[in-house]
Image 1 (cartoon, rainbow, N blue to C red):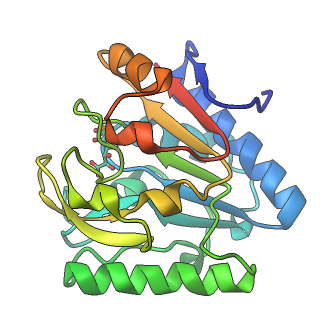
Image 2: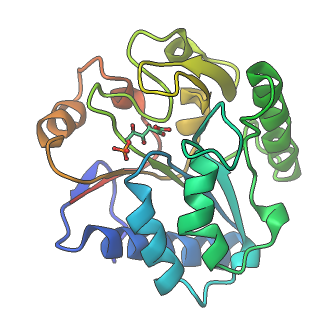
Length: 231
Ligand code: 6PG
């Protein structure tokens, strides 16, 4: 698959398979170039199908050269039905041979401010190793809500205006309300952001965001390269 400049919108016939291929192309390129693929997973339900294909098609990927982070997490324990980590564990992590230390879980079960601070420090330690001002993802996956939110950056939230911290507590209308989220400075530091949006019904919203000039939170994502994969 050709890795083109952004913003590009891909409308593959098989959404999950093509999204998985897209991720694997970036993974192999990053590992070849830097020896490590730093991938942020998105939350919600859409990623489940993509994760299943990623585990199937990426069985031979050197997962010990992959570092996984989470764009956001709900403030619930990791075994809770609403946990993004649990969704990722069930649909991907349990099916691939990745060292536990390569998976950076946001501890949704502790005080949100403490969890955000802990995650901030975890990412900063890796960024320091790479001489980066802040952690740089090779590929950062994001979802899109009906209200234009992404990660846990919801319309009208003060979290939208964070310009210094990379990870902060946030609240939103989508239950569960208490969350921890990556902020725009961290999202926009990524080499490539890929929005995964399935199930139709959001095409008009995507068009508004890609056209520019909208106030939707997802419209504030301006990474070096942005791809939309819809299906
Ligand atoms: C979350 C998400 C959120 C999600 C969108 C889309 O924790 O809820 O990170 O941003 O990606 O709301 O959710 P669906 O994939 O379930 O439509």
